[in-house]
Image (cartoon, rainbow, N blue to C red):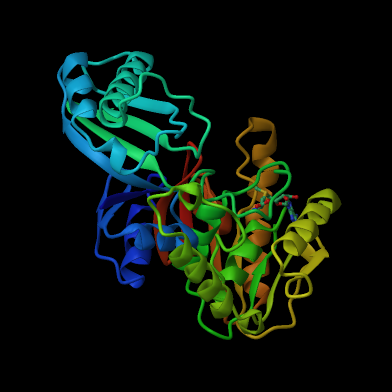
Length: 366
Ligand SMILES: C[S@@+](CC[C@H](N)C(=O)[O-])C[C@H]1O[C@@H](n2cnc3c(N)ncnc32)[C@H](O)[C@@H]1O
């Protein structure tokens, strides 16, 4: 089977690398990385991918210049190989630069074709749709349509530890990417001086502990008859055995906001990391760590509103003072504020463009 591990713009390369590390040959493309494999591989990707949003099974692709082309393409695909007669199959869609402008019409045409195909194969005239869910997606880009089934269910950033989002949370997938891209050598303490609800801390701890991000959450494909139940249970158990929380080392964070810190502590507990991560209320202006060569990794405020801009620029100068107070430290910062380097008073050693939702950001490494 062909799969697409869908990812946010800018993270495709990391997803490809993660798949390669799992022993899967993957190809990066706009919107994710593509790989071939069996149902077991797709489940493994769901369980272990830290930076992807979903794993989609590609049922078919083809050129579509009209709704009739789309209908014929969807009708020609072997839906019965995956969907049992009682499957629920809602259809979502998106179109970009296509002649088929109406997304809702594309969805309706696809649904009609899948129903027609299943009617012929199962020799029934009506589907109750009371069984497991198979989310069909029709994605049209230019003249090319891709029809997929979503093996993940809820998006993969939903690891299961976050209950409420706080003021400006970072997506778990982006936090995981920041940790992967950071110059974080083994034995280096990691500290987030603006930790908010704790996403970076938890993702860093999961990586150090080799803890699969999807270990405790369900995936849509687990209820699919065409996916091997026993093999998926075995993979989950293997992942459980691989996790070693003893390897976490020194990871901690601080923040000004007591409410964010309450959430942070709750998330840490819900992530199964209680007692493994240090958290304290502290203004970063007063923060001095008693640790050798720490790595500071921060997602500070960006000052998007003009009224916040001055405070934010002052905070970036304070980050410089924090950096100067710690000999041999490294600092990684993600921000949408284009004047970070000017405020910080130094050019970053490395820079990378990333997106925090729709906000174009720079990830700066000192
Ligand atoms: C964009 S949020 C970080 C969100 C966090 N990454 C998360 O996943 O929830 C920025 C955080 O910086 C904190 N902050 C702002 N000024 C600070 C200061 N002087 N010292 C410490 N924390 C500060 C805010 O309270 C806020 O929680």
